[in-house]
Length: 181
Image: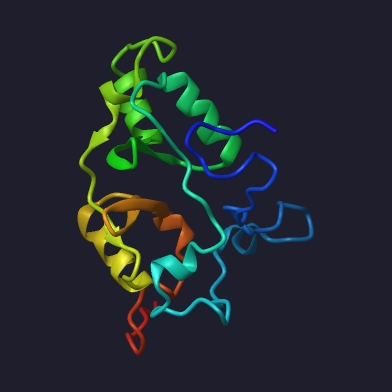
């Protein structure tokens, strides 16, 4: 069974929730219902849930800076993820995201088969401790204007959380008011 670089799981053993839980558009379903995100938070995911607990069933997938951008893109496509940790040994040196590829490779007229990840990655990204809550992770990403956040435990990267991973409602502090229109 093939492994993807430094990932800790094989392709078949990795399970992750689908990115979009909406039903396909049909004549019977109005468009507004089709694309609305879920508003009910699963019972097991609360705002005070730690990032580590939230990512417990997921493994880190990363690459070294010597990977080509094309290889990293294939890995992101195959895994259904939008960012990879860039590691040297066990040390996090950066992340490479879909946006990095779009802005620094495609718009920069660079060949993804020849460009190395270390040339276009986001260096020294903000990180969050594994013990932090989903509220803290959500707030950090919103304040910083980014969507992917490496999760650290004891100086070692253990996972990556995406803004899209955090269920609606889990990014608010318990008892926080919700906006109504």
